[in-house]
Image (tube, rainbow, N blue to C red; front, side):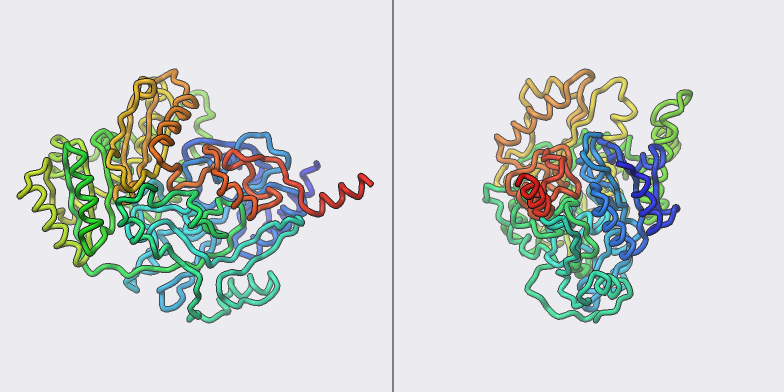
Length: 575
């Protein structure tokens, strides 16, 4: 197919400055955050919802594959092309420029456009004493709100569960191959796509909205996470109760806006840092708090000592950057770093991963970022839990921890953190994911690939500390464990030994997880790395019957599925 007419059509809608073509210009947007890359005809940067709608129309007219992309922070290659074996031209639509946020119902709910980030929402809500579904603390900087909903991301906040809403505005290609705009925001915005998009973009609708029976958050999650005797996970990506239009869609539709609940900020918060050499002590704390306390934790993050060490050394520059620059500027800084790497890694006279090497080298000139009290716990204890309680939960947990460690004399101890200790503890935990990648990057000549899994264990699984069988353990250089402890969702990064077959190790690892009743991925979509379960495959096919959006995810087919009009045409030709 001649591609020039397609590019000309995109240029008429966006102008040349909002369109990237060519291998070098598009490289950053064709590569995953950790792994994966593929070919693309063009990367589009619409700045308005109407431009967004118009380029979607062009994509459908010219039979293009559409890959939706926002901050590109996913870990499973789900927001970038994969390979070069597609049957149609691939177009990536980057939504970050469309980042409006509209506060409705006095800020108890928000409307988020497709490129708005959690950082921007957090800033908008702060004067109202409210907070978004998720905050910094899981794995990536700059994550978008819609991206979290599309992936059923869970985040670090125990009470709020996975990002979820039943109220959204989205475009999809129906079984007849026609582009449709579906308004399920619960707001009367007009009848035609142009009216709906125009009224939403201009704010021409009431900001006090009628109540609806449709949910704008996972409001039942606290009940679910408290059921510690259940033999199923509390949350995972393919949970059929969390798959609804935009929620869990993984880019199989083009989301224009979502309507979400916001949450009241607590009056008071207190962080506790807990250390132990006996994993069963943390199990006891989890079970006692979730079954006996009136208040569920705000956050409960786990770090194994070896992950502590990697984050301490290879995440130090991240901790310094966040502390000194704040979170607002960092997403752009890391995007710039990615574009620089794409150029520098091609220059033969320069060492590979130069920016990472420079950042790692520079971090050595800064003082130790870990408070001495927490450093002492690192030396003394193998297992670490960062626990934040709010309001009435603070005294409940103080009493519980004193009982366990002072009266019952369980192995371990705890720190009632001051402001600096709390801040540095959470920054250390946040730096963990990037630090694992940095370690593997800088030691790629000595070690093999990195195998990154996020898994959801059964809520009643007390044996959460992994004991790898020899046929897997012999291939692992460093097993790194961290995660959302009260949800029983863990990030497990394995730095493999040089020469180990990553695909074989992963297959063996997933078989082990299957035998334990675990679910994976827990909070990133299946992307191109995991096979979608049957119910998830059906959900994707119902959303996208012609396989126009993000084909190939979940190990599904990449080719176009025949739409009704094509089948009728084939039938007529056969006659």
